[in-house]
Length: 417
Image 1 (cartoon, one colour):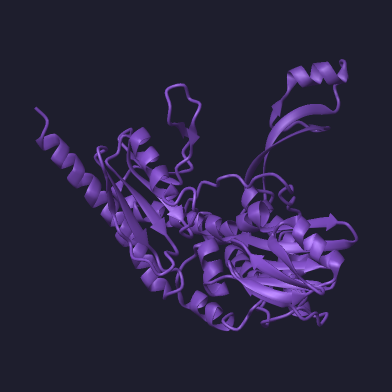
Image 2 (cartoon, rainbow, N blue to C red):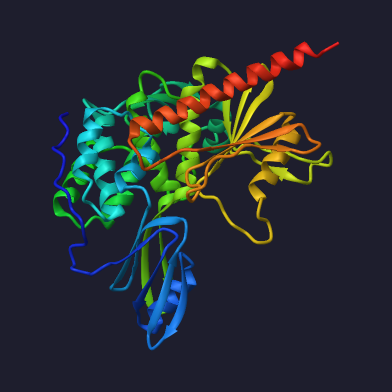
């Protein structure tokens, strides 16, 4: 079935609401009604400080997107261009098609609208030329035999009645996890789209998936094994996961209804870095694990989950902590280093990597920890530059992980008695 043409761009809400715009981790001063200011303070997405005479200071945190409080709309704009944010979220292929889409999205200031366009774009690619089909196991009572008879259920529930028969059988159809997740994401984004053309495109895509059961809201999206058969779905599913697991919510506080579409930037950066390092380290063998659970103490009381670990031959070979922004805290000014030292201690490594997306103008500096034999290496990845440079930086980091690990093991073997 042919896919619909891509819709035209839209940059703002159709109802004419003048949005309040603030950059992530920045502030803006605005006039607000007291009940609206109370709702904004209560939901916690923005820090609210009263200035007097109905004027308030809003401070954005690490989430970006669109918030609606009655007739007030707040847009939290990421430091990186919105198309780049969505590239990071989907971690798709860098090709002529994406370059064209990124160029056309360059003027879009509304993250919600931009995400809807990118969701449509990736869904079209995933579903072209036709949606993927697969086998799924069903259990039901039928009048005709097929598959396997569930004798225990038949005896227990039918009390000797022969028909219908309790069966377990395989169906080959569209109702597979990939299509279910994709449909749920399309349905999630459709109600917040103001552009009629884009709404029609989303509706056509949903009709392509007619007969598919949407993935249930609130259930985590499972990890999907990728093969040559479903590889075309990968970027669309990554974006759908962002929507379903972290993207949007609705709330109702006091007298003002609220609606939000928000993206957690630290989570996006961590997910992108994990996926990129997984691809880059594939040729070196082993396994990249995200959020590997372990404990620091022998009593298993102090839990920890390093962001990214690389395992080979049954041993952890490298640990990476993804840090979207260097956090300054007067009480714990070097918390990142303390955390990495704990990871290296537990995993038996003599070095660990802190990888930042934002060093606030600072330069990466590696640190050797006294009396521990551990080096904490610091790296910075520029998310706002050309995508080619971004991808090269990640590949260079992966190569450095492999080289440093190989050199450390050679040195350790050389000094063994």
